[in-house]
Image 1 (cartoon, rainbow, N blue to C red):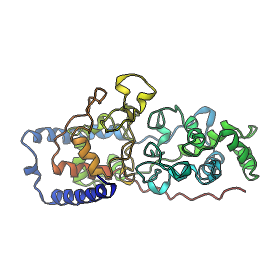
Image 2 (cartoon, one colour):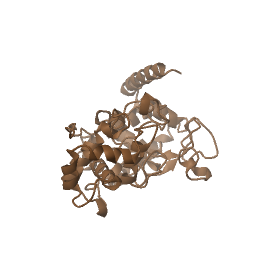
Image 3 (cartoon, helix red, strand yellow):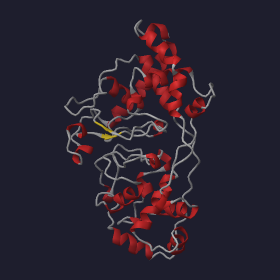
Length: 354
């Protein structure tokens, strides 16, 4: 199926689901067996909501505590294409705030305009992640920050060349001195600065958060039903748990490709084809979806899970099985996922030092 046709199918599905959800009776769409379970789901909403309370804010490591100077330096480096071998690609090229800190493409574009192996993950709320990248190969944002810069496929700049270039830019010297006084411009301070900025990229309050905080009018009844489904029949919360809607774990959900994901690093069966559970914050703004960008809209993602994935293999997560969702239930789930979208503060592009 071509990409254009898949996008057309997503649009048609969204319209059809919306129309059906608006006009079909709820009682007629549910089997008698579903009604008691949904009543039980509604009754325990208040308990479930406690699991989704936002934390006060991101925690910065002791060896890289927050300062505004570090944030400013990290943001400047993040948006500076001179860190790449071509002087054309910056971190923000793939992690664009206009695309909820992704790039809106099925797969990223790297050095020489060549397509990358995987879909670009968002950096949104990455301060709360235990392991980074789709396969979890970095154990901190500091470790993650340097990976794409020196990757031949991505920014294609050896770190010694990055440092030479940064040191040659006079305007960076006072910025580093202010951010990390007494420390040289090095791989360590470069990574720490970028990581500091990335830790500040946190989604703002969404309608869902206002609902959790007690505003019963913040969510539609449709979205509230979607929340019940998310936590019960659809089983989404088994992996997309907590306020950030991720267990920070790795699962094979049955995407049909040859990428081993975490399995290339951890040689056990359960990790074969397993990929990191992404946050669902601002998910409606982050199409397409999956580690390979193969699902182009939320309706397609829900259909994917409803059929239990596309690939049956020994490593398939036990949570993956057909869900038998009705059309109305799919509509409710989409409404709930859309309620996770926050209106974030506009991001200004920094003036780059000379």
